[in-house]
Image (tube, rainbow, N blue to C red; front, side, top):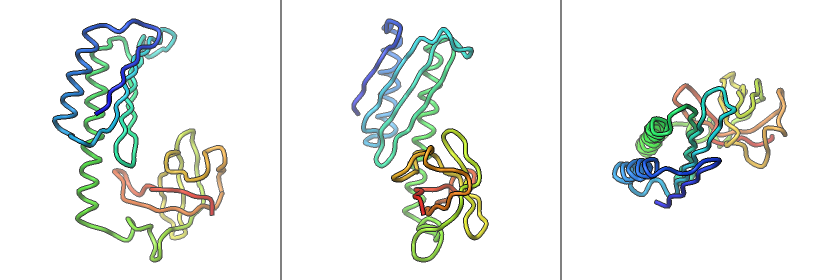
Length: 179
């Protein structure tokens, strides 16, 4: 696993570096060959109401990127919390891969026979939104699922095509394109 550690607006402390290395070793032990690259950023943010520091973890895994951000007063505690959350997200990815290998449903292949589903954008927020399919199913989508367009290109009521899968809280879009 390739590791890059950055400190912004502060000096990196030896204890923080040691904690990052310790957590990295845990990730390697539990998720060998899953995380290809890990970037850890510690930034001093005295102007934030959440606290004086921001921890950002960006992990590159096959076909995906996992991002964890935490804000607070104590860097060591934020590092522990951030790596715990990253571990849970990696565990979910592994479970989804195992479940996907064992059972394939029509929704995993696009929602309708023949491939992709169609729908209209119902609600939009900064990084995500919801699509109503032609068969009246609400589908969550994240900005990362957009293909050949951005959130700025979309508007409520826009026609889209998409592929769906079962997510933790219901249907989610694997990819979304303009129809």
